[in-house]
Image 1 (spheres, helix red, strand yellow):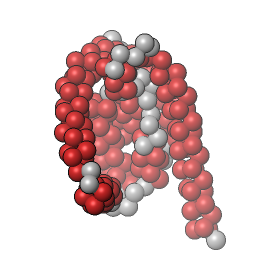
Image 2: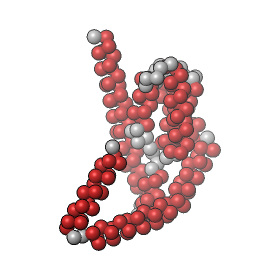
Image 3: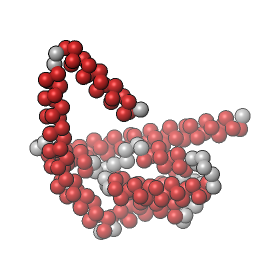
Image 4: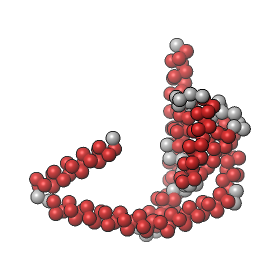
Length: 196
């Protein structure tokens, strides 16, 4: 759907430029935009590698394990149908902790493993309550340190590239709370509907 929207916008823009006589400006914008995108992507590699290295050090130092133990009492309440010592709980906690530290590449395999374990628990091809809750929380932008945004701000010579961290934590709290509340609201509505 998104691809169709982008294609529609591009076609409308090109047709408008053709009839308006501004195709030269469109060509110039295309080439300059592509050039800037490539330059930005290459420039971000070093900064992203640095931040991912810092996060990997935190993982090796046991900080992620410490946070996993800290979050376990909260997470077990969010997924009441998963036994506390089930492997799914470990994958969920590891996924959440990795996401909080901006380790998206490390979080994705753990998220897939968590989904596989939750599917085994539900013994169904339909998404279980736990799977829906897990997906809702994951899509709520669970991040404490936005390494990509910090890297872009550093690339464009921001005076304080890390000042976004406070705002990110606030946004994460609000979006995650909203995701949990909406998840619970729809769950209890479905339970009441099935009873009625």
